[in-house]
Image (cartoon, rainbow, N blue to C red; front, side, top):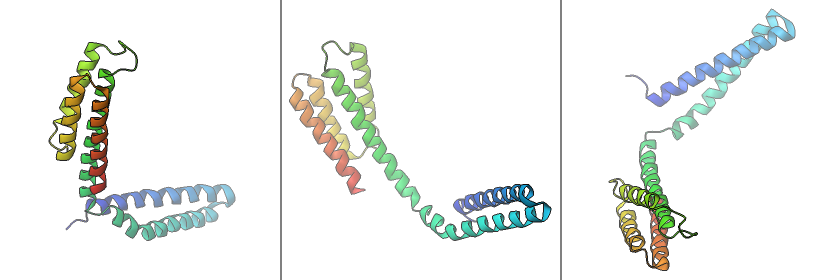
Length: 166
């Protein structure tokens, strides 16, 4: 049975770290005092790097445990939810620009398309998807800024609550 990938990666990093430390000690020893000093410095530096790596191994393996996959998946879901929020916010800014005629029709349509596509991704949590639909509906009307802002606030709060619950 081969060790898990994380253990093999840590072993490889340890090997590189010890080799570099020993090589650095060797060079320093040669510059400071000759061959004998080079061997002593290389051995001390390599041994110090190996001991430090062994002491840190348990903490590193605890951080990179098999449970990291679920955290990564949750992070992906949170990232998608945040992308939905940002895309809808940019679409809202295109529909209600600060400067009259500040956004072209093509740009507004492109932002609308992106907002709808991101909102339709399957991995977007259902509450965020429902809030996104409400926000998109309010923005699509394009008549009431306050209603669109209220819908956007609901979307922000839903995405925030979704992040806190995971």
